[in-house]
Length: 255
Image (cartoon, rainbow, N blue to C red; front, side, top):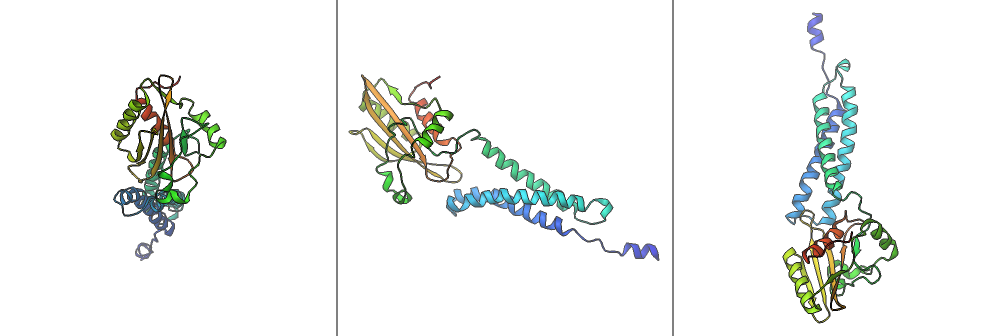
């Protein structure tokens, strides 16, 4: 009789375990789905990216709750839900690891999003200053607050000298821009100016690009400015874009 009564005692599933797995699952859904729905055009990046980051926050919360749930469902407590807690731990760690890997690409990059080869006289945006959301933004260069950080982080970025005269240099730069898949918004050979945009593959972030070609001695000098429309920092993307053009033109970086 005592044995039968003992067996009939209900074992309650830990509510904390249930909450942890629910939050961790939500974090995994946001982490996995937001890049996809953005790429498909279902959500703009200004909506999907914050939701993606929310997935990381939920993963952290779910992981903390899961660790507490593992303690409260230890065998001595006689409560069910330990498997749910372990599942929440796994999901939380997976999401946080994924975000850490993505963020590591820009490790060491300063919190600036406007990079140029000419800090004293950056190329200006003309056509792009009136395009879409830029019409209501200040497209001027931020000044020394950004310049000082760029000098420290990217000392190799400098004007790009070419042996070709300006017209030939313009053609070479335009060809490189087209080969990168950047969308040319304006190209004026007479003034030596090219404006373009580059859209990221995952979250469809749009960055603005201004390139200026001027006579320099018997050749030409190419200056470039790359500016992100969203965010304070760019994880080093704009500097990488300038290096990409420099390398395509066959110019070795400064040592």
